Length: 294
Image (cartoon, rainbow, N blue to C red; front, side):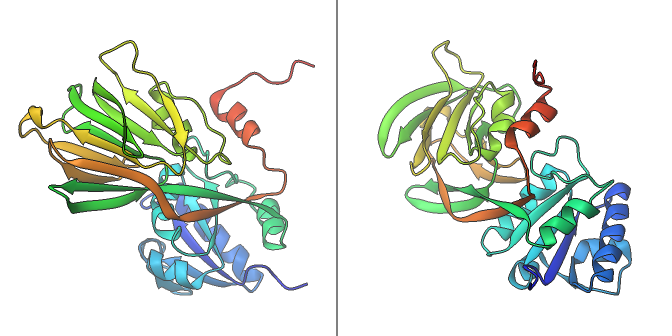
């Protein structure tokens, strides 16, 4: 039977000794099985590896059948924003804290990864969000987010005013510290900390979670994933600097009066797991939920 994957890319957590150690073990383990191995250029430099070609993330996306991300969920998010535009399978080895997206243990990756490489795996398609900022009808900046796009002030604990529209229908105005617009993937991240609900990854839905709203009626709301969310920052706030944060990694500058459009991105990330992966087991483990009583 032919192998489902032939060219494998390695991406790691920069400046992390544990991740570098796992990457070295992964490289030699894959090399023994005669796979073509490509390494993200920053990691290749840190490892001092000259036995494999060093490439950019985009080049890895174009040439690889499978990419292994060694690090935490933050590393997966950074890679996902780039790799989602390519039809490449992505799997994570956890060298971070929570590991909602990077679910293979670095201590015994061989057996589950061998299953995956033999074709025994499960696939999830995770959608991303596209955030765009318009000023006087002109696009000023945009980026993608796998977890969430967040409108917030440039300063901590500072109230802002904005209106919220769903598919051009006015929903409500808010006076709050900001607004989180989250995918199901991001529902266990910032949105959960702000009091939002957990959405299972298979849902085509988006959750809006106000941040510290100045009203007891400000509650999270779940809308259809095909909806276009529009946030209009009140022009009455003067010239205060605002920001739209994508996954906490990318910051887009905004001003009062700007329109922020957030919709589902065109591409999805093809995330794979070993057979038997259970999302609810992940939740029980990471969130400390109770185990079975009988």
